[in-house]
Image (cartoon, rainbow, N blue to C red; front, side, top):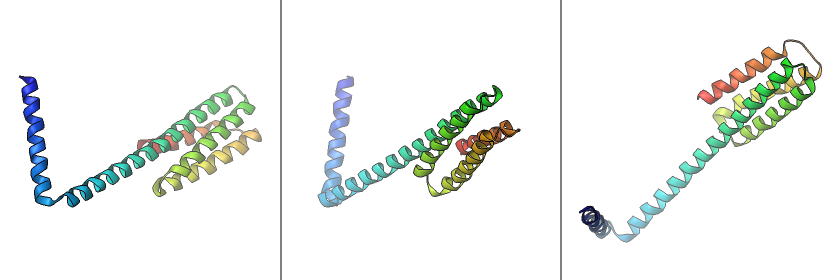
Amino acid sequence: MLKFMGFLMVVGLAFGLGVYVGQKGPEDVLHKAKQLGADIVAKTSSVERSLAVRAGIVNAKERLVQAKSELLDKNYGKAVSGLEEASQALAKARDTAGDDLRGNLEKTLEKVAAAKTDAQALKPALQTKVDELVKDLDQMLAR
C-alpha cells in the first residue's frame, strides 16, 4: 500500500510539473531553476563564511584561555606564543568576516597585540586583560 501511495505521489508531481511547464514555457522554468541554484549557492557560501569566522573566533578564544592558564603558572613564554596564535586565528577570522564584524575583530586584534607586548614586558594585571578579551570574543560569538 505504501509503494502504491508513493507511486501516486510521484505521478501527481510529474503531472503537476508537466502542467506548470506547459503553462509557463520551458525557458521560464529553466530560468527559475538557474536562479534558484544561484540563490542556494549564495546562501551556502555565506553560511560557510560565517562558519569559518565563528571557528576562527572559537579557536582564538581557546588560545586565550590557554594563555591565561600559562600566565597563572607564570609561564610567560608560552603565554606569549598562545597570544600570538590567538592573534593569527583572529586575523584569519577578520579576513573572512563581513563588514559588520570586521571592525570588532580589528579592535580585538589590537587588544591582543597590546596584551602580547605586555606579556613580553612581564607587566602585572595581564590576566584581567585576557579575561576582557575572552569576554569580547564571547560577545561576538553570541551574535
